[in-house]
Image 1 (cartoon, helix red, strand yellow):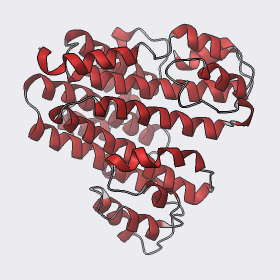
Image 2 (cartoon, helix red, strand yellow):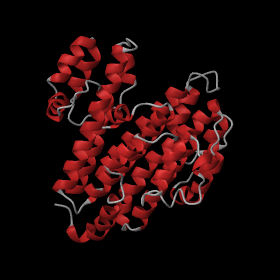
Image 3 (cartoon, one colour):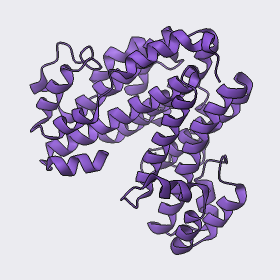
Length: 349
């Protein structure tokens, strides 16, 4: 069991925040709304979002702006937990924040292509810069890869981005976004996997291994299957796209998956650890995306239930907050395109 004394105050704080997460009934009500402005108005009435949407005119919030405000709510929740944490507990949060930081780098990269309006993130600047060596304003206004690399030159993932940059003679972003984003994903998982052993032992270490390791395995499974089903990539190319870490999947299993064709892949998957978990989840969906979400949710629920006064509660809260934001974005997009309410609920539950 985790240390009751060390985590009792923090987990009490986090559990109070959990009480503000949206319920299934909230999702049902949101699915029945008729416009993005109605979604915003609904969120304004909820304790978990009333602060971030305070003073906002729902009629002036478009889908893209809503997504950015939801991102801000995630950072605000992170800051609440961080400020309430002791030094040792902040070590994990520092690692976790790097993930959010790399997400912002991805947004900056995409902005070079799409020229999106990122002004909504201006209110996040002071908060972001408290935890990062990267200046958020300069990051989001970078006009090209050279400017972005200069902004992140002191960040731990700089070398990963630089490697992609140096591998191309043409230094424009065109057709290279996937490579940069993949480099950031592989960096993060490698980084947190190495640092966990330095900072944590016993129950805390096991919680990080279980949450991060499960996600790595499931991402690798999804990427391998897509590589075969949709792109017919060869074995060596597939390996270059994988996170080089194994949790419940062995190195030999990964090699076998990479060699197999799509039909063989499914048979091998069904007999694997995650194939057996998939059957236990009793889902009607056959997609790996469904497996990914349901399996991670199950792991997070179990972790918190088994050790409620520990780092597990912090890890699971951050996971479910992230999931909630994705659900809201999905609902909003479906409402925007006038999907029936029952169809919207099927997409998130």
